[in-house]
Amino acid sequence: MGQSTLVLIKPDGLKKSLTGNILTRLSETKLDIVAAKIVKVSRELAVEHYKHMSEKPFFAELIKYIMGDYHKRKVMALVYWGDDAIGKVRAICGETNPEEADSVSIRGAYGRITTKGVYENVIHASTNKEEAEREIKLWFSPDDIIVDLYPAKIAKKICEERVWA
Ligand code: UDP
Ligand code: MG
Image (cartoon, rainbow, N blue to C red; front, side, top):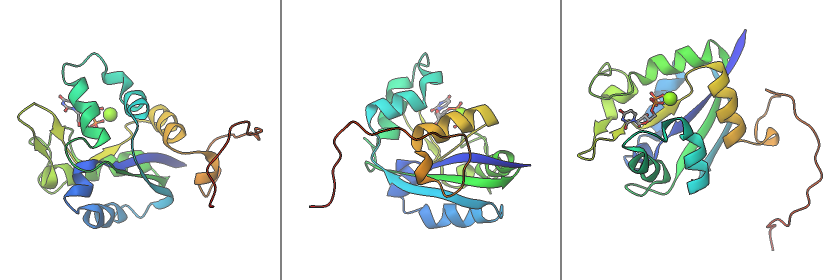
């Protein structure tokens, strides 16, 4: 059965011009990209994404890292879909700690540990189905994704929005 998973190319990946390399590595999985966008990460989004890490001593640094304080203020967010998507993507990413990650994995090849102790590991990938659903719903709206992954409903917009002048 198909699975979906959230991938983020983190600010260090974008700053180091690794987008092409990372997408090429991920294409080895033969999974489908069903959504993609460049995001300027707000503090609210960063904190919500990493809320399970909020007690960690490096949390403040992690938030700065994902918001792009040390690199570029952008992240590339993608949704991959297909058979065993979560496991396949995680396998190519490698271990969380770039020094422990297999050197042919994305994190092993391109990650580093900063002097402040944060693992700058260039990519995020969901670890299980529940996390994938929470993260995909956090980063994308139903209409950003070209397939129906989760139930959606029609809601009337009551807020103003920016349109082309
Ligand atoms: N992280 C870190 N030091 C640690 C553990 C995690 O800097 O000891 C950072 C790292 O960037 C990691 C992110 O926090 O990717 C989220 O941690 P998690 O345990 O969820 O690892 P992941 O799922 O990204 O492999
Ligand atoms: Mg994780």
